[in-house]
View 1 (cartoon, one colour):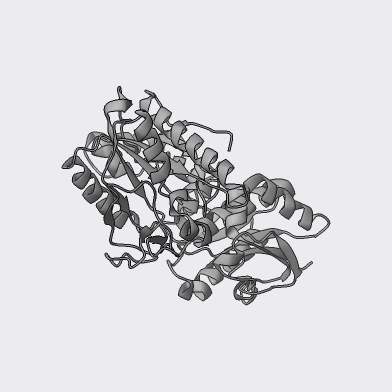
View 2: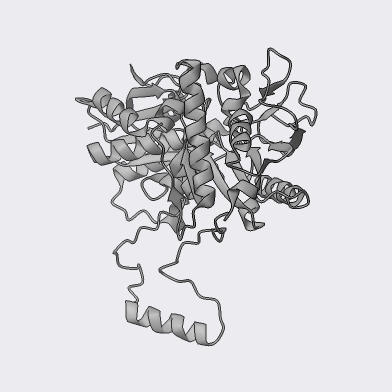
Length: 78
Length: 351
C-alpha cells in the first residue's frame, strides 16, 4: 500500500482493522464491514448488501477527491 | 503465597477450531487449557484460568470483547496475564494486544506476550505490555512460551526496573527513573555524550526518538470523472485455478487479472473467482468475490460517469504472514505496472 502511494498514486485503503491500517501508515482509510466480507454482510438481504457496497465505494471515491494534511479515516454508517 | 496467572489464547491454540471458529466468543476454562500448558511448564506458580476466544472476534470487536473478557475474570484472583505467543499471526497478535491491555488496565496486573517482529500487534501494543520477539511459526511455541513465563516469574519476584536492553522485549518507549549502578550523575553523562558527538564518536542516547516510516500524502484527484482507477487487494481473490500460484500465506507472488467487459466478478460455484487467502473464512468471499474486489460497484459508478474508467485489470496478492520486505517489493512491482498502464488512483481492500 505504502509503496503504491510512494510511487505517486493517490490511494485509499479499505480496511476493517483501523488501528492496523493506521499503524502501517495508510493515509486515506475507509472502514469496512468485516474481515471476511469487507463489503456485503451475508446476513443482510441482497439489496442492502449492494447498498452497503455502494456506500463504502462512494466513500472511497470521496476520499480520493479530498485533500488531507494528515492520516484520515473516512467513516461510513456501516 | 503462590503466584497466579491467567492465559489468553485464540480458538486454534485453545483447540476450539480453525478459521471457521475465528468469530467464536470468549470462554473461560479452569487451569492451563490447550497451548497454555506450554507456559505452565515454566511458570513458577499456578495458571488458574485460560481464556479462549476467536481472534477475529476480538480484533474486530475490541471494546465488546474486552468487556466480555473482563466480565469472565470478575472475581478471579490473579497476578499476571499472559497472552499468546502469537507468532506472525496478525489478527492473533492484535487480539493478544487488545486483551493484554484491557486486562492490565482493569485489574492492574502486568501483561506479557510474544510475537514475531513483523506481527502488526508489536507496533500497536508494545507500549502497553511486555512483548518478546518470537518465532514466525508455531513450531517455536516451547521457546517463546518459556521466554514469556520466565520473564513473568521475574516480574512477580523481583523489584525492577525491568530494562529493555537487559530483558530483550520490544522497546516500549517508557522512561524509568532509577540510579545507574555506577551512580554517574546525569550532568556528567550529558557532557560525555556531547563531547562524543562533537568528536564524531559513537554514543548512545538515553532518549531515543522512535522512527515511523511514513509516506507523503498524495494529492486529491481533481477530476474523478476523468480518472482511471485500479482495484488492488491483499484478500487473495484470484481466478479459481489460481494461474499465478499465489501462496495462501506468506505470499511472494501477485497477479493481475483482466476484468475488461465484466460487470461483476463471478463466484467460485461459477468457476470464476475465489479467494485463496488462508487467514480468513473464505465462505463469503467465495460466494461473492465483489465483497472484496468491488467490480460491480465500480462499474455502477463508471456508468454514472462518477469515475472515468475502471482499470482493465485488478491486482491481487495474499496479506497474511507476508513479510514487510516481500510486501514492499510486490507493492513496487504493482505500482510500476499501473504506472505503465495509465492508472491514476487506487482503491485497495485489505482483509
